Image 1 (cartoon, helix red, strand yellow):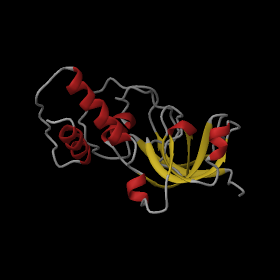
Image 2 (cartoon, one colour):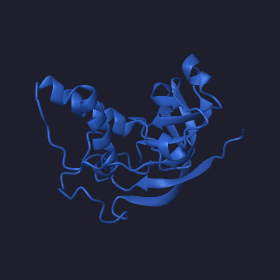
Image 3 (cartoon, helix red, strand yellow):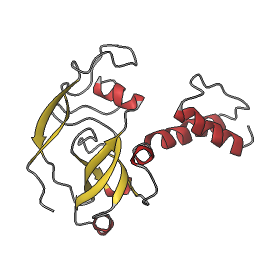
Image 4 (cartoon, helix red, strand yellow):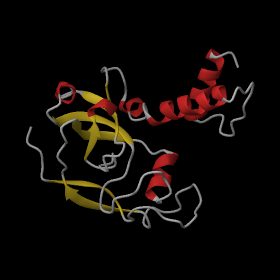
Amino acid sequence: MTLPSQMRGLLLVGDGYTRTPSAAALEAMEPYLKPGSIAVPEPGPTQAMIKVSLASINPSDIAFIKGQYGQPRVKGRPAGFEGVGMVVATGDDPYAKSLAGKRVAFATGVSNWGAWADYAVAEAASCIPLIDTVRDEDGAAMIVNPLTALAMFDIVREEGEKAFVMTAGASQLCKLIIGLAKEAGF
């Protein structure tokens, strides 16, 4: 497959972090993102490049594009922490190479090549090969919320709590936590 030299994406306007407080909601896209073109990235030795078919939007994405997340923004790079797509190029690492041509759910992590673009780069270890019956809509949400649910529930257990309150009980995140809580006897 011949890859294009340029791709489209929602590119970050800001750089680094901001100290300006703002609401958790995204009031408008324009102060934080702009549609644009950028060179298609090259995957590093342990990375995969994915042709993105669908990407999700999580509260962590909103905090990130506003410069209020634990990872600095890189101006001009695409945003988006997770998505689903086809691996079209890899680095030389054996596991990365094993993903070539496979459809995967992926998390971009600290690669600074987000999922809100035609192509994204992710560590191969952050890619989950998918079977054909997994819909793109489900694959695009397979990493951030489940890992957040596990981390939050681990905090509850480590603190020895007997009960906990969730304010967004109908959200996907809380539904995952409810499943963990039932399994643990809460």
